Length: 141
Image (tube, rainbow, N blue to C red; front, side, top):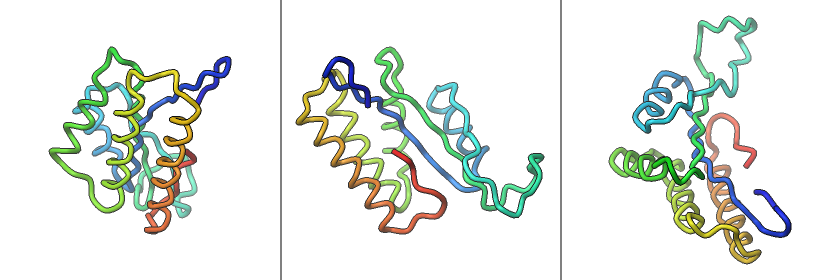
């Protein structure tokens, strides 16, 4: 969230974390027509060297920034995950992310009231995920 002279702007980022799935996340990135690549998020503690050959229990993250109105990132992400729904708590988090995006799109700068509402939705999204004990690490969002 940025505050430029008391005007509030949200940066909308779609983040998908998945264990042992670098190749899958990179294929999803290609389908979403983005240049983003899955990045290593957490290395299995048993792997000592930087030359990783065993990805067992290694977390990868795909991040797609959606604020650029010239790129159809949101519609592509939404279409893809409506056709191929996410599993477990990720689907609930995705639904909340869509709600935030639809309300933020073309409505920036935001009022303090709307900013508070989006913070509350984001907090509840993370709370829902944490309560359901996901594997891996929680997002710092």
